[in-house]
Amino acid sequence: MTTTVAVDPETAVELEALRACPEALDAARVVGRWVWVEFAAKPAEATREFLKARGYRWNRTRSCWQHACGYRTRQAKGYDPRTKYGAIRAAQFITTPEEG
Image 1 (cartoon, rainbow, N blue to C red):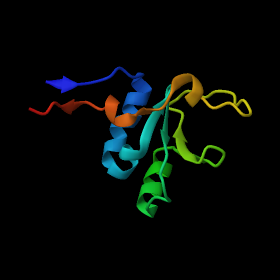
Image 2: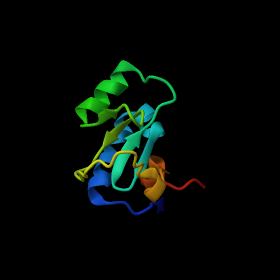
Image 3: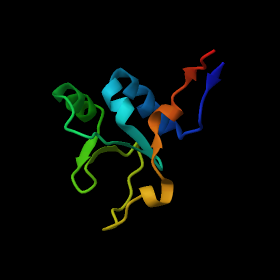
Image 4: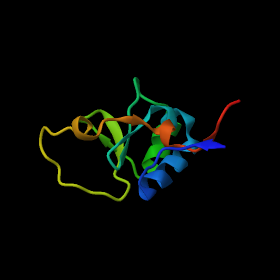
């Protein structure tokens, strides 16, 4: 038996890819259709290289790595999508066996 939460297909592909980098997966959040990775401190070089290779870009305004998952939007100055969509832990979208 598994536990899952619905997510857009393009976002789901990116979330599954994050399994290869536990440090990034732990810090990942889903904001709308995008994946944001926010670290408390600068991550290891290997983690940064992994994110770059996957197409994440550093957003210095929001201090996080972001992946659009195929959905580009026009940037509105001062707008924070977290106010509209929230930021849900990526782990909630990953299929995992239930304990017990």
